[in-house]
Length: 301
Image 1: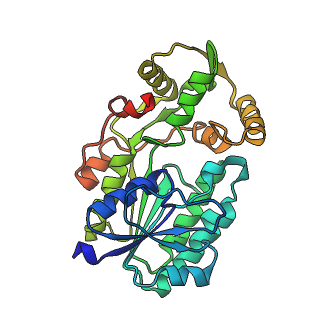
Image 2 (image 1 turned 90 degrees about the horizontal axis):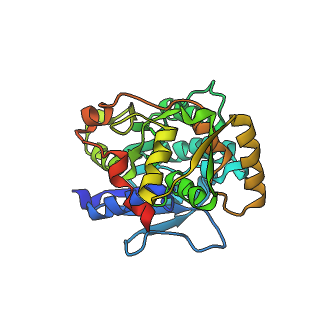
């Protein structure tokens, strides 16, 4: 029975984690959120019954305790949104490896990992390299894993459209876009991703598989900005700037602002196209994904 499944989520307080926690509890699963020790109160979803286990991803003993009676792991935790302060080696690579070892010892039935389109060991971009290395550790394990590489994710509380909205409202008249804004992206609504993650749990055919999924349309970065401006009823003139110069400005913002609207890893994502088959999510999960323009009402809040 679904009610008997016990699921551990790493990154449960993050953008995707909050939505996934809500979906799983509504579906009758018992959810346990893995939190690292912190003096701050955890930003858990409100009004949702969630158990909590406190352990660092590199704390093998703490992970073993957190996995008692757990059947399934959704591994979403990553340092990428911390920008210049991120420690990808410790969290995304070593932390994943420690979690895999603990999961194997606990005989976990299913292990889901969220990655990115374009994850490659030889990538010039740190996040994509870290994701690829973590994927390799998972594939070499004995776990019944499912790796899902996604396109650009958007939704309420994301690190992309929300940051762009802040910038668009902040800067007067002009808006800098890297290299003409010609990078092609494939925005995927977070609710569609989470639906696929939950449905995959009951599909045995998704075991020991890697999938690439994105939204139902290819959009250039400039088209995405234009769509957001239309939603916000704003007008700005685009000014193209070479990526290295924009990166220098972003590095300065990361060091001088407590919560910068964009990070260097965010710019890395815009340095190259991130796409897959337009029909991948429909063919794999029988899901019709939402178009970008149709799911932006949260930006008006």
